[in-house]
Image 1 (cartoon, helix red, strand yellow):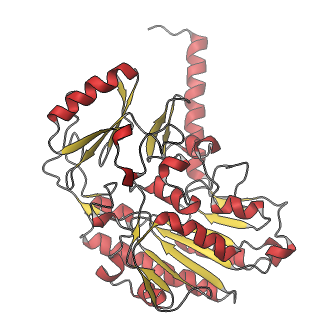
Image 2 (cartoon, rainbow, N blue to C red):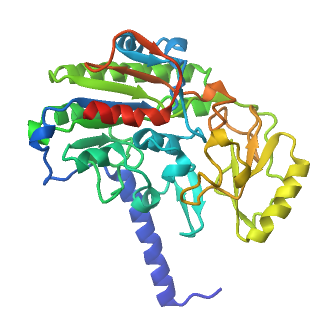
Image 3 (spheres, rainbow, N blue to C red):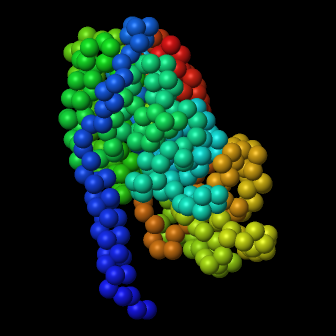
Length: 404
C-alpha cells in the first residue's frame, strides 16, 4: 500500500491526536467544578450521604481478613448478610446499577465491554472517550436526580460521573485517575463538606479500586488480598475521622460491586471451533462470552453447533436467558445484549492461555463468592441491625429517601 506525503501527514496527525487524548485522560487530576450552581434554600438542611465503593470487596472479606475499623463502624448501623450483584457480576454494570436502581439490561451498561449495533460502536471501560459519552448511559443516576432538585453533589470517581447524563454532571467531580492519592481524596472530601451551606454537596460518591486489583492478580485467598482489605479498612478509618471533624451529621453507605472467586487455571476453555471471528464480534470472554452476529443468518447455525458440542459451558440465545438474570430479549432496553451467550460452569473460564487467579462475572445465584458487601451507619440508620441478603437495585431508592 502506498501513502502519499499529504496522506502520511494526516495519518500522523491522527495518531498524535489519539495519543494526546489518551495521555490527557490519564493525566487529568484537576477538579471539575460547575460554579454557577448552589443548593436551594430548601435543600440546605437536607441530610448528607457519602456512598463508598470498595471494588471487589467480597461479602465475607471484613471478617475473613479482620477489617477492624469497618467491623466496628458496621456495628453502629446496618449490615446485610451480603449484597447480591446484578448479572453479569462485573464492575461497570454493577456500579451503575447501584446509582440508578436499574438492572444492567435496563440502564444500558450490559458488560464492561460490549457492542451496540445501532451505533456500530463498542463500549469499553478502558476507552475514555466512550466512558465520557452520555449516550451510553440510561437511567437517572443519583447525582443527576439530586442536581435536578437543586441539591449539589460531588464525585470522587464513579461509573458515569464523567459523562453529562441527561445534560448533567455532579457539581464537583474528578475524572478517574489513580495518581490522586487516597490522602488527597480524603482531604478533598473534607474540603467539600467545609464549604458554605449553599455550595456544600449533600451526596458524595467515593470509589476505591482495591481489593479488586489484588484479588484478580493473586487470588481471594492471597496475603496480598488480605493486605489490600487492611488498606481499605485504614482508608475508611481516616475518611470517617476527617468527616467527623467537620461536625456534620453524615450518613455513610459502604458497598461493593461484586465479590471474587478463584478459578481453575489448569483447564481454561478455549474459544469453541464453531465460532468464526470473521462472522461475530466478541468484545469479551472470561466468565461470559458474548457473540454479536454480523449477519443474523449466522446466529442459529452457530448456536446449534455450540449446543451440540458444549461440555463445560452453557449456550443461550438472548431470548432463552433464564428470567432471574434479567438479561434476555424482553429486558434488553437498548439492544446491547449479544445474540448468543456462552456461560462457563464455575470454576472454569474462557481463555486461550492460562487465566489469572481471581475472577468475577459468574451468576450470583449459583456462585456465592460473587456476593458483595453492604454496610451503612449514621444518624438515619438503626444501630446494631442485621438484615438478610438483598439485591443491589435497592440501594438507589434507599439513598433517595435519605436525601429527601
